[in-house]
Amino acid sequence: MVVVVGGLLLSFLNILVSLIISFIAPFSQWDIIISNLFILFISQIFAICIVYFYFIPLFKARNIERHPLNLLNSIRTVALICATFTLAFMSNLILVYLFKFFNLIPKSGYNNILLNTEHLKNPLNFLLFYLPLTLGAPVYEELLYRRLLIPLMEERGMSSSLAVITSSFIFAIAHLPGDLVNGNLSGGIIHVWNVFLIGLSVGLTYILTRNIFYPIVIHAVLNFISFSGPLVLILGNHPMINFYNIIIFMIIFLGLGIFLFSLWQYFRKRDAEWVLLIRRRNYNHIKYGTLYFLIIGTISAFLPLVIYFILLELAIYDVLLYYLISIGCFGFLIIQFLWLGTRTTYGSIEN
Image (tube, one colour):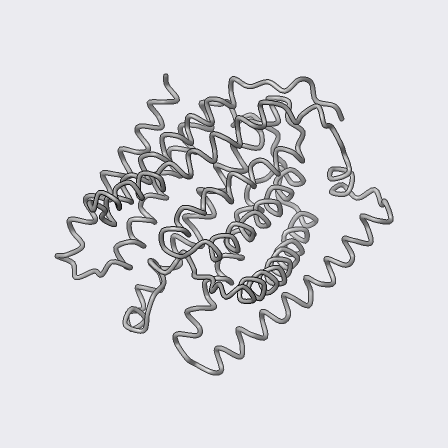
């Protein structure tokens, strides 16, 4: 019961903030994009507080293993930033060309928060743009999907590698409804794949370092790089565009080297910690408990989308209404899926 109350509290606070901001927006001369960014960031702040101060203590996750910061893990973090971005970049190119071959043009699901030339005249809009994308989202999502979910699943007997895959799938699928509403299916597929790759990367980082700081840094840097691209193009400053392209080229060059080195380590059966982790097999963990996490996580992501299409058919759809439904349903159902996790057992862990 206490878990459900927490979910309702999270939903209520986010809905209340959304209503207040939506009421203030017309008087502050904010347009829909600036209002969306502000609602998004304030909602993330509330979500961070609820997850960190309520759910982590509730599930006794404060007492889990935690390692201090060190140089080795910092090097791993930089390497994974380069390797993850490179892998996502290459797979993006393949998927984009594949969709174009079938005359499908991917559209971004972030069009409702991307700044335009008018916005860029006010320097404060840069801050408002980056706050939710490089601070709010990385902190909130890493606390929920890595700091809370992975240990929770491990404590239920799920192997670390399967916990990373499961949390990454739920993390990725939760982004699809927004892509379908604001973009299209092909764009959503590309985005979900990229988010899944990032989830694997930060999940692997978390179980290797047992310190949530490193996944937050990886997530924040990748978001900063990805969302800076559209702004650089909008600004139209050629030196800045060239500088951005050089940075991207350097990251990809380093990423390819790291990726090839990692493949060499894997196939040479070196005793690197991450290789041992990935090679570990335990099919006994693939039981109903894993399916519960996946099913409930998927429902929590797609129920708002179903309600959205129903409202659209009834001709009573409104952007604010979708925000309220999405926040309410997702906030409540993600808690239900957490609650199911506490009641699910997988058997003993085989190392």
